[in-house]
Image (cartoon, rainbow, N blue to C red; front, side):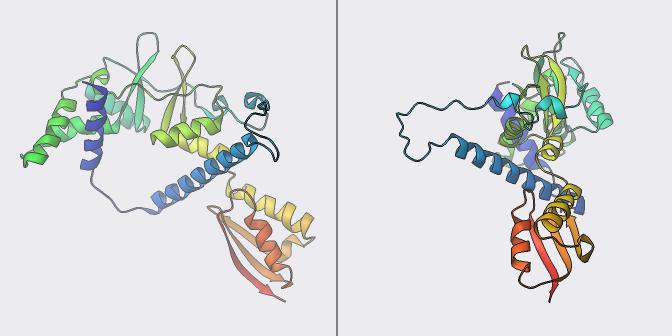
Length: 285
C-alpha cells in the first residue's frame, strides 16, 4: 500500500469516529494546547527578531553568527524531557496484540521497529480503527460510501504492525531543542514522538504534554513570580494584603489597593510569560 493510501485510510477512519462533547478534562487539555501554541509563537517571534537585520544593515551585509542554541543552558533539549525506555512493537506483531499493547500501555500510538531497533513506522489507534471499522461493518452504503469503504478495506487487509503502520515515522533526536521538537509535534498533529539516534534506532519517546510543560510554567510558578517579583519587589506591597490565585494561566487578584496602582499592577502581571488573562476583583481605595 502506498503512503497516500495509508494517509487516506487514516483520515477516513478518523472521520468515522463518533463526535463526543468535551468533558471538563478535555477543556483543560485544549486550554493547555492553546498555551502551548502561544509559547511556540513567542519563541518563533523572538527568533525572528534575533535574526532580523538591525537598523542601517542591508541585505548585502555579512550575516552575524547566531549563538549555538545547543550550548545555551536555558534551552532544554529533548533528552531532558523524553521517557526511557520507549514502548515499541516488532513489525510482525499481530493486529490484536498491537491493540492490546496500546490498551495496556495507555498509548494512542507506538513505534514499529525492525530487528536492530530501527524505527520503520508508527502504528496508531487510527490505523487500527480502519481495520476494526471494516470488521464491524454490517451494511453497504451508496457510491461515495463505497469509495470510502474501499480505502478502509485496503487498510483493513493488514494483519501485522508492519502492514497497518503509517510510514515513514516522524521522529526527533535527543539533542534537538524542545522548541524544535514542539514545532514538529504541532505541524504533524502528533501527541507522541519517537526519539531516535542518528542511525534511526529508538532511544526513547517524548509526549506533547512533556514538551508543553517544559515550554510554559505551571500555575504555582506563575503565582510565585507575581508575589515575589511583582508585588514584593516592584510594588513594595504586603503579599498578605493581595490575594493571588492562578488557574490554567488565568490570574485572579483580590484585596484592597490604591486606585492609582491598580492599572500599573494589572499591566505588569499581563506582561508575565504564560499569563493568559487577569481577573480584577480588587477593591480600590
